[in-house]
Image (spheres, rainbow, N blue to C red):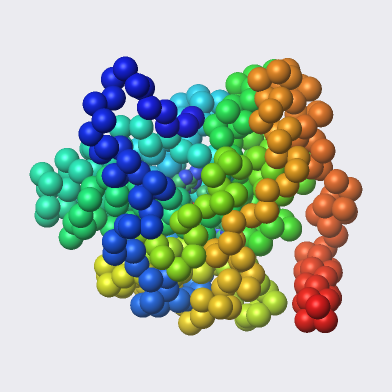
Length: 374
Ligand SMILES: Cc1cc2nc3c(=O)[nH]c(=O)nc-3n(C[C@H](O)[C@H](O)[C@H](O)COP(=O)(O)OP(=O)(O)OC[C@H]3O[C@@H](n4cnc5c(N)ncnc54)[C@H](O)[C@@H]3O)c2cc1C
């Protein structure tokens, strides 16, 4: 979906351009400084709760539970009733509502109708906190729409690679349903069945029949990891870098095994950057659930370059969307998406974890030596 002006209905008041975070980005006031208040790595403490369904350490889940326990509202992304329809943002007021919000969904979520409801809640219930969790651009959009800061609004974003269009996801699920000969009732983009580990051991699961699938065989996930199916705007994202519209930013703790092996936990390791005094309040609210280690922004960026720069747009991106409405689901997956499954990734998947990590470390060091020569 792209925004489009309906000339017949437009009254030329200019409001849409004023609140569009992209059009007016340079003039926007009060962005927060990335990691100004705290930068840390975290993993769940033993016995602190069940974070097994969370993407990494489960910081969002802990925060969301705490918010609803105090009577607040939580906004997060969930799978639509029909998986094929993609992801949408919903409001949660009980711990049960929070459960489907856990975990990363690698598709753009549908925010239709959400911002006006948030505004109404902020104005009518100043005593209740509203926690909004979304991509950096969604948090910027919300701030821009509201036009001013609310004491009871708390925003949390994550380090974002980019999001594919719901069209690509729907097409893929349609093909999967035909192949499995039944509807896909749930789809997890990543799971901790074999423990949390950055990339190598990540797997997705299709719960038509609790079907676990190594990520290297999942053509949708492989095109996501290789940055081939993002929305066009993600390749030149204006919401990366040091100015954020969120109080707190979380991400995967890439490089934890190499730089802090003693801190690694198979329950999931996150990085967390506190960007505002309100973010510090959020951190204090849930810190008792986590083991923490102090880090620096530079350390985090070394293993997560997309914090500051957009992913390179690969040439194959053209085909991913150009042919999506022409090809059948089978041809689309076979001819376009399956190109991303390569034997090297499959071999790496089957090698023991320690060996895979050694290979990655050697490759990274060689690359560093090469670039220092240049
Ligand atoms: C599209 C996408 C790209 C990402 N890219 C990177 C990356 O390159 N590097 C990195 O370090 N981390 C990345 N992450 C973040 C990472 O995967 C974890 O989400 C993050 O570490 C938070 O983990 P958690 O355990 O605290 O979250 P959980 O407790 O599991 O909660 C997940 C939270 O993410 C929100 N969410 C999930 N999917 C979406 C979506 N499509 N749109 C908006 N909100 C969503 C949920 O509402 C929920 O609030 C990405 C996440 C997404 C969704």
